Length: 372
Image 1 (tube, one colour):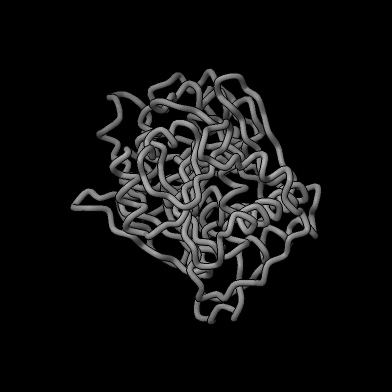
Image 2 (cartoon, rainbow, N blue to C red):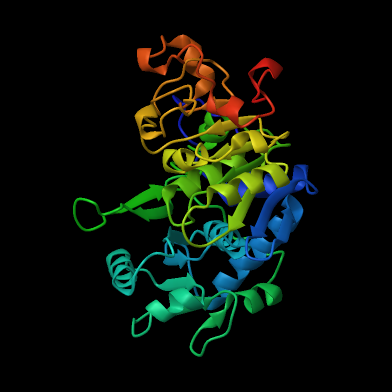
């Protein structure tokens, strides 16, 4: 594993795909890396680190054959499908800067991001392609189907070179671009280097997500948000864990989430407080999650007053504090460092109020705390 103190300078050269993912492919080629489930028919697609490394090099070769070069920018808009992870890794390996965008983007949003970023390419599915009609885009790349004027990513991947090995990137080279949500004005473009996200989020995987190579981690975020980079890309793979994803559409379905947690060997889970408010309205005593040991949440405070009257309350009301050093369900960042600080008064659990993890029968909950 890459070990880097917060006070140290990053190495001269760093590329997340090359130095992290491909290293796991050498050390644990048969280790689980990516597990995608299509919610509509439960079809599963799995990749070991060895398989993922081969595909990402094919992707980098494909992008190189198209004429993309280091420093170019590509807007990528897809659902939670395997091609998103493969394309992100391939672009990063080549030194091309991915710009993840949510499938909720409108035609106007897509135009704005392409023009603002001066992107030379767009990688998307048929739905995204329909919103890009009439836009001047040098490289149009399509996943999952065929359209006139678009290059098929899946066919190109199959024909590309699995041994392609481009030069390593500098730590200071551009790595990834995100646009802000635009709640107070037009979305603003934010550029991160190869190291700031690619190396910086190692501590996310280790200290917040508490991941290890044997873990299967599920984060329900959309691929277009920065949370996907933290919890579905950089963080888990730094620790050699398996990224689990469900390709679903529409509004969040708490019953479907509970079925997924119960059916698959998911050991760590990340969901926003908005989802947890819906989860606790379900009959959690009807479910068992024997593999789930660690859960986290972020994005907004989780206020017990937002929960239905009479329901048990979570341990914490804040995303910034925790009452225990190793909780089953943590709403804090870097829970292993928590003993160094005095817990905030609002983080203490109320006597007689079971935590959300006890309501969900998590693997780490003591027997006397599990729901009856």
